Image 1 (cartoon, rainbow, N blue to C red):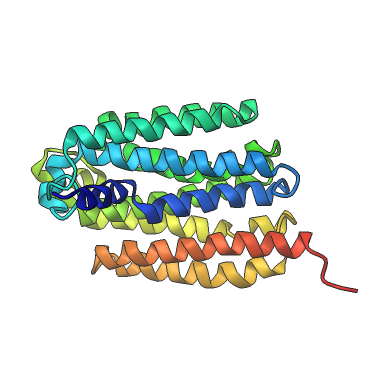
Image 2: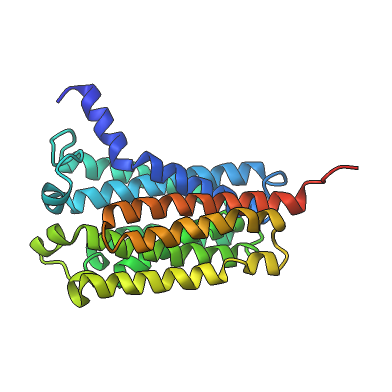
Length: 284
């Protein structure tokens, strides 16, 4: 492999889209907490720390999953030979170091969340990934906690708690669907994921039920007056996309989990415009 192909492989290990998405969620957490203008340096450090941590977690996940990926994802960087397993491990450690260096500049609550999350990222791949439901729940916590981390970075976690819960539930739904998608490789490797343990259809039914709970609960930030009416105008289409994706996953889990991600991105946009509607003057 050429140096360019290796660099591309290292970038792929981080899952750039996931890095950007998680960083945006951290920003949203800070924005909802009202601290973006007041604490710009802390917000920047929190966003960068999130990006480094997510990239590191994805890289070390690929390191541990390299044998499974030879079956499920042979085009990924390690199976195709762009990055060696040792190179992926070293790269992840460098990224973890960057995340730690940035996180220690933040308030104590943010440091605590970062510490728990960094430990959880490593524990997930090594210990929890193949356990029915537990690995999914840990990933859901990690994604949802990005809201809390952003809010903690500016010293006001209260408004982000509801967002953490809603995001965690939606992520748990997607993780279960992804396990259905990957069932062949997971079974080959002897993992005992939720679809393997209880069956694909039952796992998808649980995932859909969880999502319905999140959709029903999605107006809560508006009812608590954290967000304005614009939140509802954007979150309702997001709910519709996610519900469609859950139903679609019974026939095509690959398309279902992909479309669910789009719905989650739209929901994240709802958090931004909803908060902006109550913090930005409308004129006069």
